[in-house]
Length: 79
Image (tube, rainbow, N blue to C red; front, side):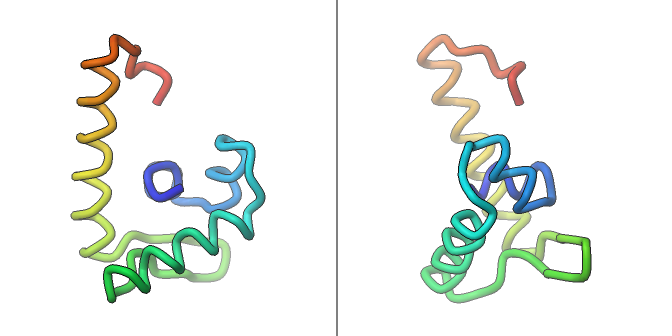
């Protein structure tokens, strides 16, 4: 959920893309934030922003998923 939420800057759109509920995505992100010990997103009314920690983690996750897709022969054009 992190990669889609960060890329789309929306828990609702990430949930739609991943065929999950918005509350499921939100719970995943809260659990991840608890695990890393810092907020990854700034939640504002109708707006979501990545924190500095969120930006760093997103870059690593996004690059890792792209590497996995390349190794497996999947097209990265889907995202």
